[in-house]
Amino acid sequence: MPAAEFERGLVKAAVEILRPIVAQMIAKGIVFGHLESRLRELFVRVAETSFEIPGRPQTDSRISVLTGINRKEVRRIRTTHPRNVRPTSFERNLATDLVSRWTADPATTDRSGHPLPIPFRAKQGPSFVRLVRATTLDLRPKAILDELLRTGTVEMVDARTVRLRTDAYVPSRGESEKLAMLAEDPAELIQTMIHNIFSQENNLWLQQKVSYDNIGEDVTSRVRAELRRKAERFLRETDRLLARYDRDRNPQAPGGERRYAGLGVYYFESADKANPAERTLRVSKGDHDGAVETASPARPAAARRRVRRRP
Image (cartoon, rainbow, N blue to C red; front, side, top):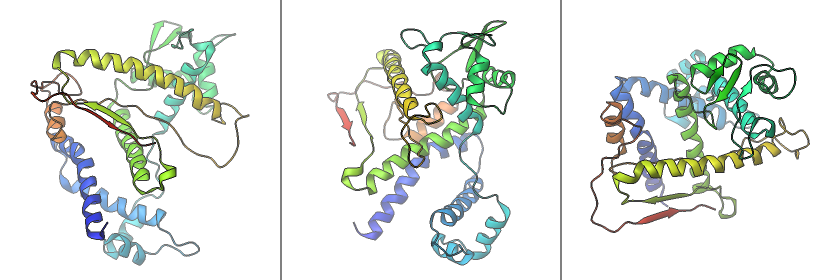
């Protein structure tokens, strides 16, 4: 592929990835300058940490050449902003680990693998305190319980019993926790897609999507519920499988260099595939009662099935 065509394609992909986020930013009154300044910082940080020459210090001049940002601005960013800030949320990682332990342990699940209510503290058997201690020794169990109650992850059955509301950590309350997921999860999906574009044929990662474009509005709520149940069963099995190989959970698991790995499943739905940014904006203004817009007229064309597979 010619260099100019490759550049146009990559820039177009970046624009389309940002389109729904930009629509939400405009709806919330966030102006272009705020994103522009953070993009400059991002270019500098990525060039600084990912494009080093071994054995040589990374200079302002070289970063300026790599990014096209003038050297004075590069110097300002490098001296003003903290380095090596991780994009993940510690609170989310801790909560995800705790929920995973709850749903993967036979002592805290029923025969179907669904999480059981457990006492906050118990002399014997499973308890919320034991789950917390297996997850972290740095925070008090009561503080973690309060945080999970705030985000709607758990609820109190009575004064001494805690129940997990879902099989996964998806906070129903707390905008900061949801925004942390927005910052992390799409980046992981995009990294998989980029890997598959630029990797050798025998080293592709799993990337599949199944979609139909003529599903009636009257059945979408049923489709969402059925797919959610199937996905949750699948992810519970995936959680147990990965837990067997995680060396924090299983010290006997095979060794080697540390890796971060997982598998995600997501549902999508829209009235108009062509313009997701406008859909996002309409939903953000409260025109619909859910996270997606389903007011779709029937289409005369025969339903088409699209399957995109990456081994």
